[in-house]
Image 1: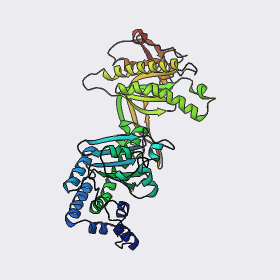
Image 2: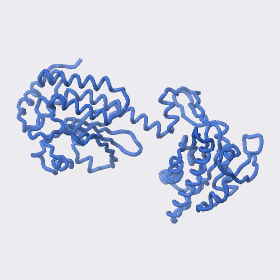
Image 3: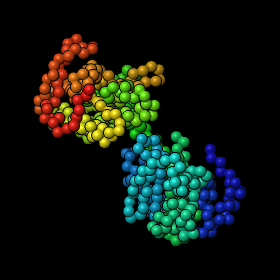
Image 4: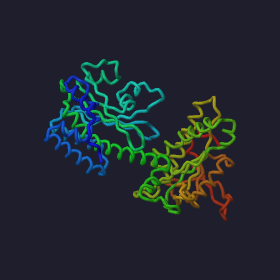
Length: 439
């Protein structure tokens, strides 16, 4: 139960700084709920309680952050609050950026910004966000009296006509930082009652930001590490050992040639850099043609191409186009780096069933891809180098191509009782590319 006792020194500080031009907002944000309700008049306190209830009731509805922020700001303005700018920012776990911010400005709507924070990032270190996170208290700026040099954003806010700005820190359950900002163009700034209204609403806003930030990070990280289809399966409850799902599709299995020989003299960081350079060449052509990487396997990957309901041969044709495109990008990369040993890869294309699910022991499981067809794609890929062919295909794959292919022969493969027919693309498909034979 929240302690309603007011610290006399804290309350006297609020009273002593009640002048409109004073800096007293941080003290108000530190007050308990009961005291905030006393600062507001009855109508405003009731209106804020309704907005808070609305935020909580809708916290688990469909995720439309821009629309939700607009509705929140409109409701606050309907209560008479002179809000002209609102922002919410959070640190997030993401492979591409470190923080995301959404800013509403009256008459302009909501804009979304993402940030990449480097060590010693001056943009962050000279921002109100850093100051608020460092002190754990709200940062208040009376902009007409604030020197532009204090924070990098001050000049921007002044140029846009803002007079009073508040940046309030929140701590997320993960320990990450979040912030909420309020600003007005009204020359006198926010009143004590209006700041109290924002402070009264802050717990509901913080809960909503926390829920969304946690879910967004979980969704993105799962998608990043296990792929789109498996990530959906996990979020839908497929988390028990032995649970398996299957996808029938065109498969693309790619791996680097002689990766051990290439990286044996490299340190771990340099070796990872080589693999990432390889994947930077392979993955974009796959994804641009509707493919999905299901699994990275050391120096290789497995991707699938789902059938399009409107055409039987679509998946195989897109997979072949992705394979040819990936080899073209890889060759261009090697030409652009003549000082480095060329990175070479082989690709095998097959059509069949990929099974993915949870394997492991106890509470340590891996979401992996298994199955006979996955094994066959891997075995065919092992022939790229001895056959000096960058792209090889199975019978099941060729049968679904819109065009034809050239049969190379039948080859025994470990784990399969009968020799497996192996094909290569028609010469004209590769004619306009600089794909070298894999040797």
